[in-house]
Length: 366
Ligand code: MRU
Image (cartoon, rainbow, N blue to C red; front, side):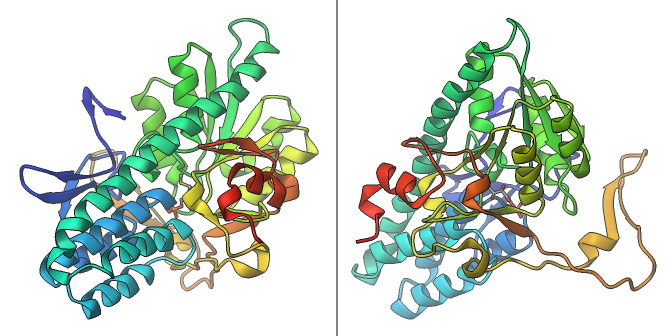
């Protein structure tokens, strides 16, 4: 998508320099920084420390991490080690394992001498597939938004609540939850987005709000606890969120706080959609609550808040008593029964085993 007048993806291989570059998201929205990732450790650090984040982008970054490692050491042990190192970075988003498996499956049977040459095009294809999946998600989601717009007085915006950042920064391009929004804007459908700030890391406040502003999407930043109130007052027409892992039965794991939005949506009759490319489905699990590992992050994210001071410098302040004990689960699971529909690259389906199997019969359990 656009940054100023320039089109960017969140990760790319610079053909002239033969280097992999990312937008370093730790600095947004206050600074736009691009960094080059060279060694396996750079890729692992970028994922673990959230220079890149968002399930599809984590997968794409891991794919290029394998490719770079094959340049340095294309042997079997190095390939296996790279898979393990990258897989250990973050536990919840299944796109990570999906991309690592796709790379390993391609590379293992090859002569080590030809692995690097094969790895880069495969990583590029993973990126291109993500962009195309998200474009299609946008088209299918657009039809839902068109339907909602048709039921409103002409000119009144479709009011969407979203949580975390499932935008283009979380994918290679377009985003998942934001793709229908960008497509609606292009189609001339008025839209208004309510952006959950998404404590503790503030992906909504920092990243989604930046994306919305960058593309001229009317929006309001709201605190995480405002969603239920806005729904009760009839100020939200639909919720669209992304997901880090959705089970074969349609349970949706996403950024902490998503479940509470789904409960409020159901209580208020607000449709709750989840936008996802198929690599985000974990076809091996059916019970989201017991089978998905939930990342627990550093308690400092809870006790401290980073931000920008008036002079433009960055600072971090402590907001709780010294040494306050914390819990910091980064994701939660929304049971399928609370999800109105899954917006995938192949269309919209019920959040259920049969709904997913109808769209993706090749994955249906025998
Ligand atoms: O911890 P993060 O920022 O990686 O979490 C991201 C999310 O929860 C997104 O909603 C999810 O990955 C979907 S991205 C299209």
